Length: 177
Image 1 (cartoon, rainbow, N blue to C red):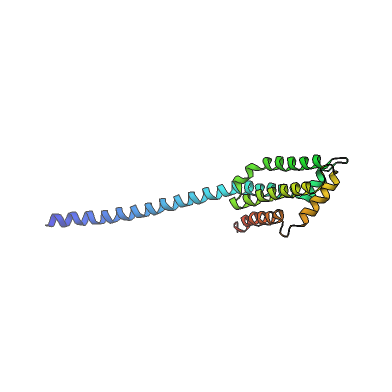
Image 2: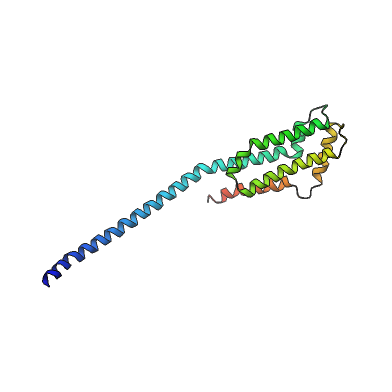
């Protein structure tokens, strides 16, 4: 019996030291893992945040560029027919949209839907205005009809999309604090 007691006197303290060391080391390794995960997330955000903000900038610029007020003035050339103006406007909108297609990767699905709806609404405004005038009209007549059609909207899709993108983009700044 005395041998068992002597062995227990040796094993119990050794077991206590082992368990203490085990849990201390385990806790240390878990904390190190969490620290590395946090650093990786921080580094990822540091890299992706500028890309995301650039996507919002590019899509805001796209929406501003397809705004009937700006695109009509930019595309209009003296002596253009209404048909030429309409096709130039639609081609420009589609080209700019295609140029910015990859930006959908960096924004929310809802924001992308807003951008697509704003583009489609702008195309609808142009086509509706073109249908309301004589096909042999000048570009100036089409431009006037486009402006009139755009003014009919109570809540322009373009303005809603711009506001949504601005707010969503600003939210990344709020999350940084």
